[in-house]
Length: 317
View 1 (cartoon, rainbow, N blue to C red):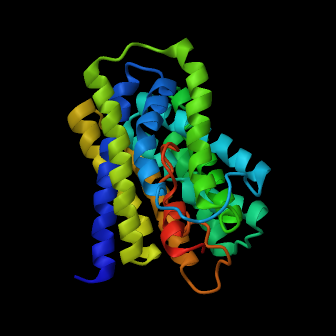
View 2: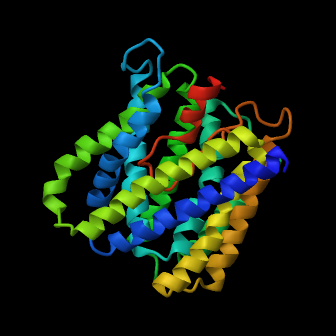
């Protein structure tokens, strides 16, 4: 088995686990506020992340070298988690994924002012076509457009902003700072809001929250292994396999059937995203490669970014 094939299979396994994660999020979202679900998933995720950070022997403190960028990233990550969990709760899985898959387009767009990225006519057209796909999914003239769609868009935008900021300051900041600040902020801020939205959780629902945290952790390990085995241009498009799982899980578990416009729009968005990945992989097309080096999926914002965990083992890139 070649290293690229092994990496692709690991990535497919990772995104299957992520999709399972989202099924539990959607189920719990029918009973609890996204604030409560995110808070407990972050809380249960702390020990797992601590195990990953315990081997960090680099000297230094937890004071960020770029405090304002770090604060903006922390805020955007928190909004990503709440918005994504809410969108999964109220929208069909396929529709939520289709909107979140706009992240590569938004990353490319945000990289222009933040990273000074120069986007040529081909990637520029890919962005326009991809955003047209988003409009197909949203159908803004229809009556079904609601808060869930706005939440999914907010998650896609804020996740993309977080990715670009990591690309901007990641070489200067310690990985432990970038890894822990959003999780600590989620814990403190959402903990303060929790008493106003809290609903008692039976043991089986707490177990589901634990499964959410465990799925995110295990999937991240698979993604790390995939990027270590294969080229980024091979691994990155594997995230779109989640649309297959969303269709299967949505139909079998939630009795959801994606409509034709959602599938058409998702196809347009995914095609644009794959094209951007392929363009970034070509030599001198992109000086920053913001999409290829993002590496984390955009959906939850409650777990450390894969690019930061890779930095700890391979050094800044």
